[in-house]
Length: 289
Image (cartoon, rainbow, N blue to C red; front, side, top):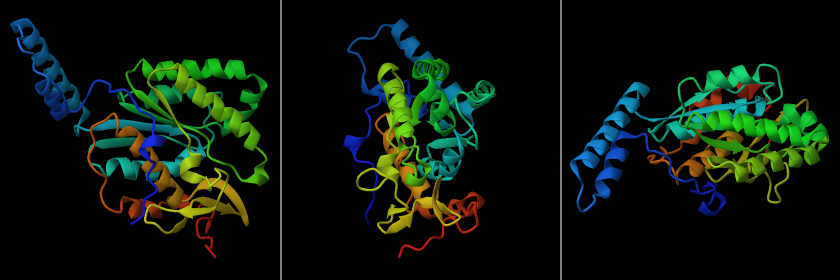
């Protein structure tokens, strides 16, 4: 079986945050016993573990909570990302992406506030298409907006995984603007600790990083990764593309969070029959020939 899981060299190293898993917290404390620990220090450690137990218990299922936000491309990616992360048994995913989301769109601040209500450990962000006009018109103002949004998430104690815009069909004529947008997202990750950028083109692009309708999927055979609309390539995702992004996100989380192995063939589950992959009808049924 051939897997296109992101290589370790392609995955950013994410510093370890406070561990929310009860058993992991206990193992961490027990693996580093000091030679002499006063009763006060020992009491503090006990309280810390007790707090961890309480926080995890209030989560409901004891796992990490990840929330995804973004636009219609992210909406198509959500089932694959959710399937990958939840197949480990250690992550619960709240998918909140939908069409038309952008940092500069009306209502985004309220949308973000709702996404943060349950105190997620990880926030996955994938957007940009609806912001291209503002990015090109005033890149400095957009950079400040990125900082503002990132700080709101970081202040809640969450790690941010920011996925760049994937390659777009040449017919759309926005590749230059996409590159400028992704440069903004990548720069955010360099100046904000706790924000990590993933180049989605490594999961969805062709050998040279450009747009492609097909590529090798996680089962080692060619899969359709992008939709066809009215006979033309479309930027939205098919299950094969969503699975590749899910695999990328899971690989990015592994260096930081203690999660189990993904279940076998998670990429071929019932989620692939979601109605969004038949919009437009037959859009993900192009011939590989």
